[in-house]
Image (cartoon, rainbow, N blue to C red; front, side):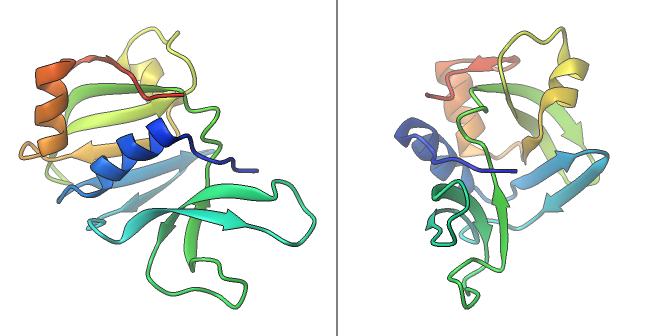
Length: 152
């Protein structure tokens, strides 16, 4: 999958989310899911330029860790098509196993009928604890169980 560069609005939105304690990131693809726990100050957005002649030449990686390979890649990273993820849905979604109470689903478009369809269409998810400042600020300004402005 080819990634893309992230817009300034989306970058600001996600960077505030990645500063939270207790967030669990889930990446879902074709029946497989990866959960990343304890990400505060470890998961970050990394601009990456490639010199191998393949496309894309530049993208923003969702990266983990503080080391790099000989090609300056983070050892764990995800290629994300940020330009396709244009919507975010915030809802109460309690997961006892992770100790989280809210979910933020990043999606392509907003034409999904109900939470089950939103979940199925979301390949990048953030699960947040009840103590989340991010949730508190969003619920005060935009509300819960609704689509959020994820930026362009």
